[in-house]
Length: 282
Ligand SMILES: Nc1ncnc2c1ncn2[C@@H]1O[C@H](COP(=O)(O)OP(=O)(O)OP(=O)(O)O)[C@@H](O)[C@H]1O
Ligand SMILES: [Mg+2]
Image 1 (cartoon, rainbow, N blue to C red):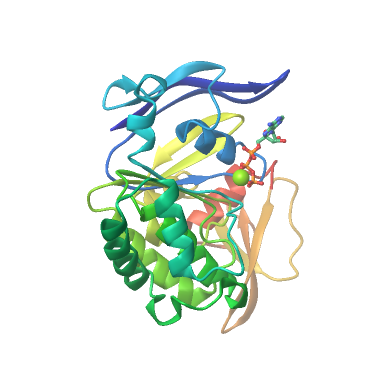
Image 2: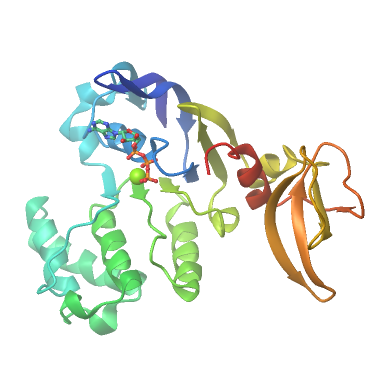
C-alpha cells in the first residue's frame, strides 16, 4: 500500500501541488489532468526523484525516504521522456538496464525474453530501435520498467504516440500486470482511460479534486449534458463540449443547468465530465 499524506510541492514561490492525500492498493490508477497540472511532479515525488516541500509518502506504513534503496528496488518507472539508444536493439537495451540494476545475468536474460514476449516484441528483439514506431519504443519502455518485477509500476503518459491497435494491446497488458501490483499512469487524454483504470484521480486547482471510478466521475455531470442540432445558437450559460456525427447529421454536445431548446438529455461520458470540470483550464 502506498500512501501520500498532506503532500505539497513548491518550486521557489510557485505552489504546484498542495495537500495531496491519497492511498493506492493493487490496481490501475489514472492521474488525469490538463497539461501543466502537476502530474509529472507528483510522479517524480512518488519515484523519489523530487522531495515534497511538506508532507510525506509511505510504503507499507514507512516513509519512502527512510526506506531508500529498499523502496526503489520495488519500483518500476517509465519517465515521460524516455531515453533510449537508437543503435541498440530491445534485447541489448534491456540487458544494459539489467546491468545498471545489478541483476544476475541468467535471471536477467530469462526475464528479458519473457518481457519481450509480453510486450509482443520478440520478433524484433534484435532489430535496432531507431527503426521502431513510437508505440514499439513505448513498449520497450514498459518492458524496462518491468525488469525487476516491480510492486509499484509508474508510467508517465504511456499512451502518448500509441495507435488505436497498440492502445488495445496496452490496455490488455495493464490488466494482466495490475493483478498483484499498483499501477499508476498519468495522462491528459481521456479516451480509453475508462477501459484501463479502476480508479481515476483528477487533479484540479493544485490538489486532488476527485478520486473515483470513471462512472462516478461521469455521474458528476449527470443531468447537465445535452445534444442539440448543429448550428443552433448557444445561450450564455450553455457550454459547447464537442461535436458528434450522427445518422441524422451533426449534433452539438453541450453542458447546461437547464435543458436547452430542441435538446435531448444524454448519458454523460468521462470526456463530457472532463471537458466540463476543466472548462477553465483546457
Ligand atoms: N523544476 C521545476 N522548477 C520550476 N517549476 C517547475 C519545475 N518542474 C515543474 N514545474 C512547473 O510545475 C507545473 C507542473 O508541471 P508538471 O510537469 O508536473 O505538469 P504535468 O501535469 O506533468 O504536465 P504535462 O501534461 O505537460 O506533462 C508547471 O507549471 C511547471 O512549469
Ligand atoms: Mg507531465
